[in-house]
Image (cartoon, rainbow, N blue to C red; front, side):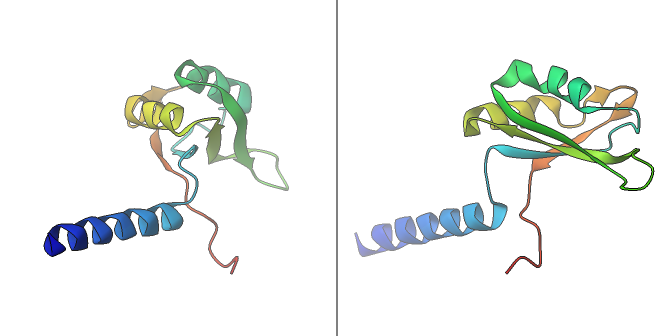
Length: 109
């Protein structure tokens, strides 16, 4: 019984630590975007998986051109998980995109 409780406690601690490191489970990083991909295109591709709160394509400050990556924030973890499973390594505007859970910015602490 002690071993069972110990394993469960360690498993829970590891899960919580992973969640803390990973950050929000409803925000996805989308990399490998075409430089022509904009926020409406990204929204259109991801909204079939659930309600989207925000879509952001990161652009260069000077040129205004896309840097080739962005973020999609869903209203639920389930929608984000579904989008990640379905969209990772898929073709979007001629490019294979990479979808992952977003990581918190480093250097904020």
